[in-house]
Amino acid sequence: MKVLLVNGGPHKNGCVNTALEEIAKTLKEEGINSEIFWVGTKPISGCIACNTCVKTGKCVFDDVVNEFVEKAKDADGFIFGSPVHYAGATGAITSFMDRVFYSAFNGGKADRFMFKPAATVSSARRAGTTATYDQLNKYFGISQMPIISSRYWNMVHGKTPEEVKKDEEGMQIMRILGRNMAFYLKCIEVGKEKGIKLPEQEKTNLTNFIR
Image 1 (cartoon, one colour):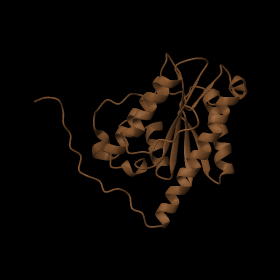
Image 2 (cartoon, rainbow, N blue to C red):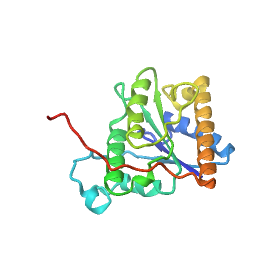
Image 3 (cartoon, rainbow, N blue to C red):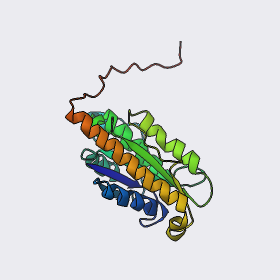
Image 4 (cartoon, helix red, strand yellow):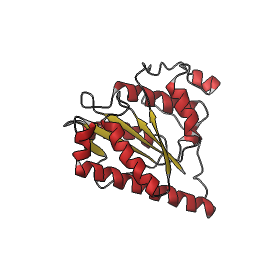
């Protein structure tokens, strides 16, 4: 079993990475493999609704998004981390996730995410963590992905990685999140062994508010 941990911050070894490394260490202790995927610092375009992914199965912008969607097929769970920029998730992780989820579900690759557990981690010096937490969890809620929680909201505080490590409660939250993720993955594995099938899917009924 493997969990993909996504560092949506501009610093590869910054505060978000510090939190994800604590989770990765805990997952390893639980016998779960993990990989930290950094979105990087190259510009990430937002979705332009061209629907190329519907025709080709890939986003028209062949960048880190397509790379991640390809990796996702071998992952059993996901944790997306973002620092707080202006009381919300970064522009990079927002554009990244908009395109990841849109291209995967419209490009016929929904199975790479659907029914796989996911979680959000937010990092800030002071505030904006809960808004970021709420924002990113919405991607999972629309994608039939179980949302994994911890003993508190999944967040750490600190201006530097060294300060984050001093956030004892925050680091504990990360460890508990790692153990909770491992627990759910193991439960899913046992369910598969017992022959429990995934829920039957109904055809989507798209409606709007025009009468």
